[in-house]
Image (cartoon, rainbow, N blue to C red; front, side, top):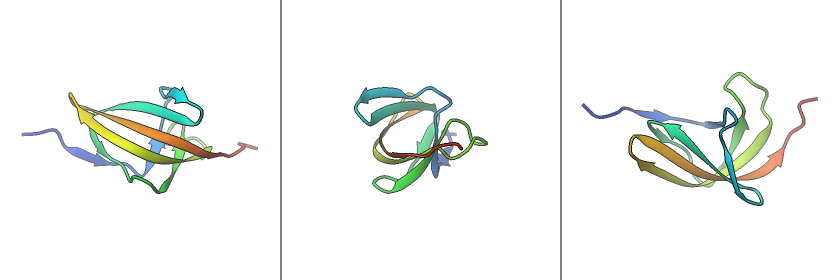
Length: 80
């Protein structure tokens, strides 16, 4: 039996994102996950935290039971 897919409609970073350049970041997640590409999605530190940014996912890669996404931050939102 293969590893199940999970559909994600927001990016949850848990502080593990890595800046590549300017507003481009990569994030590794365990397991195989589907993400919408080229449409704005919410970025949060955790699932329960306040919505703090909008990003557009540019690339999704699946390898070795992990998912790597490349995303571009479009807007930051203040938590006040």
